[in-house]
Length: 285
Image (cartoon, rainbow, N blue to C red; front, side, top):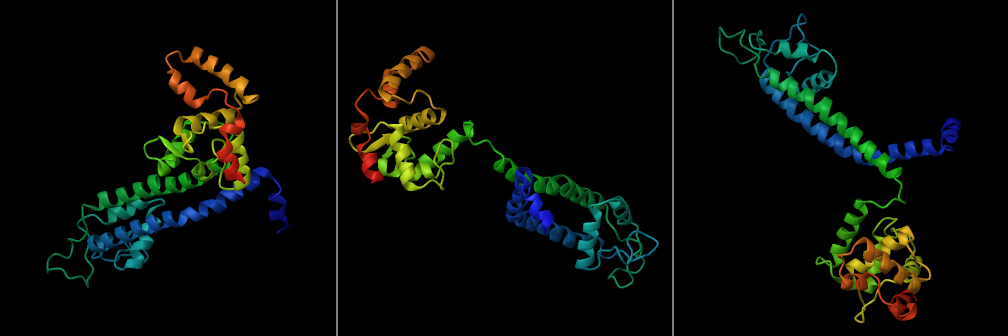
């Protein structure tokens, strides 16, 4: 316990331990998939190789056979390691049949199947290349999420914003200002506020963003996204009216084909912050 307490003091060790804990929550689903694959292959193995006689001089012996479901699962578990090909070769046609098997007289050496090649190779490939990599993928996904730099904006943030906005407005037009705070708390930082952000703090941040508000109490998709990106990257935010005019000049130089209507939509003309954000301030109260 002292060792665990000592390890928990390191930031890197804490991240690894937390990754392990979070991965355990998803691993039961991976385990369920593995159990389903083992069940299917065990039943098929009993049908194809269950009549092969148990012979201690071969690789199908009393400790390795397909005569019962339990032994079939045990054989498959061992087949994920080394020398699984020996079991495959022992299950080929021409093997002696079990005396208690229901076979015709004169067919005592006709058990086994050529499908053993497909059966064992497909099972080994599924376990070695799919299932194991699935475990690694789950762990790496949690590790990447916990160590991600949330201060860097990327295309995935835009996709998240569009997805959450579509829940309120599938047409990417306008939504009510009272829904903006709730929506932004569903979006992770740095573009959104995150679900852990208090409602009052979220309202204050929204007022500071100076999102253009229409007379009917709605905000547009483009203006909201532009304000979020601008605030996150701290692009000419104070004083707002003077910086708006400078930002318009820069945008016109960089993107000369941008329509003036779109520029006025995302960067409103000087009207004063109180008039522009009265509804947000009332919502905060």
